[in-house]
Image 1 (cartoon, helix red, strand yellow):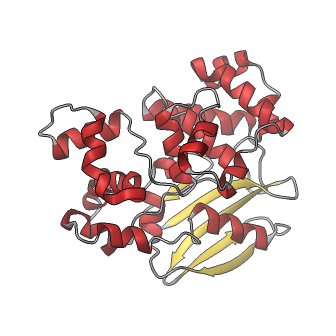
Image 2 (cartoon, one colour; image 1 turned 180 degrees about the vertical axis):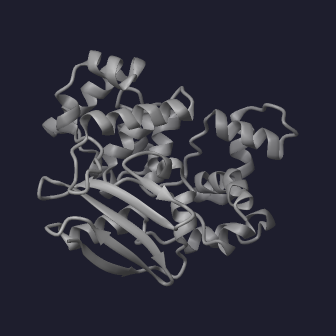
Length: 295
């Protein structure tokens, strides 16, 4: 038995671009079937159990199935709204890019939402897994974390590990079993701090700090530099950082600089006109071909 319910979607919402516009869909505990328009996700419920949802686009609403008959429907709806960013207003962003013809597709396809996890802690750990490595290694580390430390829901799918589960492991475990390399001691220190309550990543969602100050707070976490902090800030709804990495730089060189490397200052100047939305503008600019290839 399962619980099924629907959630009306915002007028500027597209399930396809909200899920496919950011690489998290490719990492567990997300499971994405693009052809079927179906997204699965497993998370830790307030009950202490792992819960799984399957989300299906259905016209102007989403059909959601909570696979546990004992699952909390209200909580499941909150999780779905959070990961798909239902309550975030992108009208100002669309206005900021309206005059740029190369961004016309963004408004037409209702793009701009970046898929995120149910918790900032999960997004933080995944972000650390993206630093100084290939996407295949990021996937490998994330798969290992979920497979070896995640708790199982009623349907057998596993959630991302809790801070307590990660804190119970040694750096050697993360090196040998997760293949996390230099990140191994960072994961232990971060998990211990979050489990003990000395660091509260979830509070960053509600922080009143100006973005530069919040960025400084995030960068206190070992393994987090400018790129990682600004990437996480985007998932918190703050887009004034560029989050430049080798992939974004390479895309810019190819698209706007005749494939020649250039200083980061030139990239930042190119998107400066978009103000606090410049980090989302460069992301959409560089991911346009994802949707063009898909028709």
